[in-house]
Length: 273
Length: 309
Figure 1: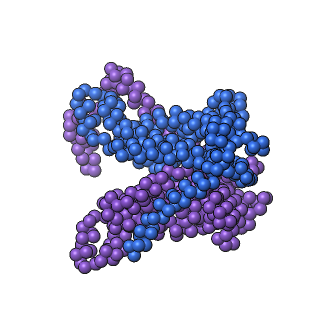
Figure 2: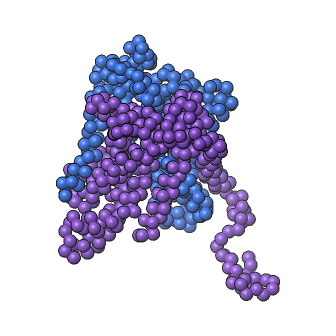
Figure 3: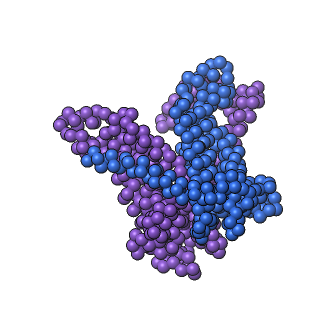
């Protein structure tokens, strides 16, 4: 029976190897064929002419992720501080499940919400078609909120009470004690939450594809439409063949490398704690 | 400040005879406002955190409220017809598929996840190479975005094995995807079982295997269930990993090698066709109700675990 347990434990190792194998074996030859610099830094994506440059998509992913961080991180961290240190008990017992529910809402529902609520608002204010970096950033910012809030709240709660009490006894107000003694002590946990959020934002597909506009060009302003690496795969995988298909898988390789890098920094921070 | 422990005034009413206690260390609103007058920055910080929390709550209410308000009136009987057609846009086949797919995925993921957690907690020696390999790979799997899973499932099951878009391809892809969740929650649950349980069992002469199955695992059941619930939530909401593995055919699968769509994929199809916005609202309501139910079960289980310890 012990061997059954060992075999089960090996499934995750085996799956990871399999995933890496399939993605890299199918994707890397395309990068070789197109040329690594032409592929990564090429500014034109025209599959019908055999031109495969994914620089616009890399830029797109980076922009919407950065936008999500700008929107989601301040709100998320401050909300976590509120929940850990300011929240009345009765409000907390309502807020905690609400955050859990926000975390559980599927990305397709978020995307739909973005389409019917955020897109019209952006349309109204800026007079564009409403889909673009700004809309995607707002939506992704909302989507990463629950991750950042719950990880940061745990981190703030795990700071020893003596930090807070010490600060109070030195004459700090409640707010000063929280922001100058407790929050700095929880800094690495909060950072871990932010990195998890970044990972979620860069890998998000279904919500982004609905609200980002999906033009495969380098955006000119925050209102222009963008295409991320993830949406590039979903949009064209269904009908692509030959080198086009391989180039899409190679887009997956680049995304995968981004994610591995983010995961590595996450575990490095976790270890440091 | 009023006297502490003053009796209530007025007519004598026996049921109101309890002492009214005013805590001396609690500030009244007036005192607090006065304190903030000298500390404008503290007041600013208070405003900031309150604002952030209010914004979060507002977004939550807007999201749920808007979708329910727009969606509930659009829930019509023809959306639940047995057969899907472009006229009725029935979501019933997709709902059935969602249940089938969740069930099939859990049938695979739960035993694998539980058994590997048993290995990690009960059998593995500290610092063994296999353990660190398992830990690194589960962490990696947990961070991989669903589109990469979808791409992998497509390359392996649809392409390399030449199955095309199949129910089983979707199930296998989802199994790998929820495996880290299953493993982590079970592992936590097993670690929370006190060592005295194991020692007691050994002391009574039970072997290792018997201890695991009749003592350790039963005490870890609520924790394992919470892993099941979390995985269910992830399966129900999944879209990107399924489009290119299970496909988008709106029918109940005849066998495990036919193409199917779950409710989330159904919603994506409705949106990408762009003709069925009202039906999409209704579908969103059904998905939200499922997610709310899953979350309710999960917090009930979490409460049970806390009560136990």
